[in-house]
Image (cartoon, rainbow, N blue to C red; front, side, top):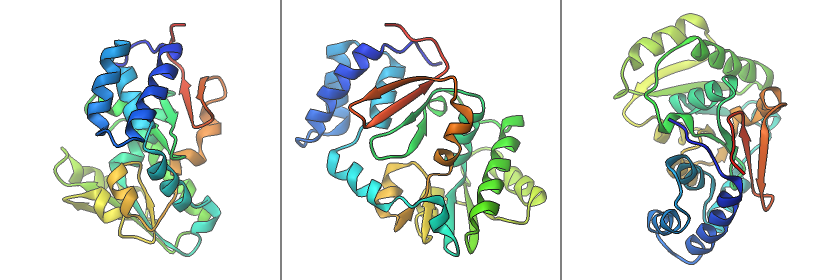
Length: 230
């Protein structure tokens, strides 16, 4: 369950965390230090861990990101659950953050198990809209086989649209990163990806008109529909 976020504390914690990881501290060791110093709750800790990266890594990822119109006639590999969950969080107006590497990430998935719902179908509709608008040469959606009911979800997607090829695989993020363009926000495949496109990022303005926005040094923006504590 998401807890109340304290913007003033988050900004200070981010400054210290960024300082440490830029100087070679292991990410989780640095996060443990910052958590203790600022008494971060689970949501604040998760936000910092997902949104902040070493400066050289964040810059490397930013340089790979394509504008949506640049994926025309390129193969697009989608890390299915990763993109679906972020889009569902966006549609539900949950907690979303634009991170220092330029990509959109959610926090909802860290605190709950994934279940197919009405929001899944709305998220699939957004993916189909994106693909129809920007015309990649082919679209490959990969679902993690080990997740419950992946086969059922794959059959549902195939039934709903013929615009995608859908596969259940051992490591969906790795398979997606083998395409010419990758759609995921998982950090490991992003380092291997040739080029990246942010599907949820394309839809951000549609769903965050009334969101609270917390900006840190121009590098991250938190879109929050939940209460915050000053």
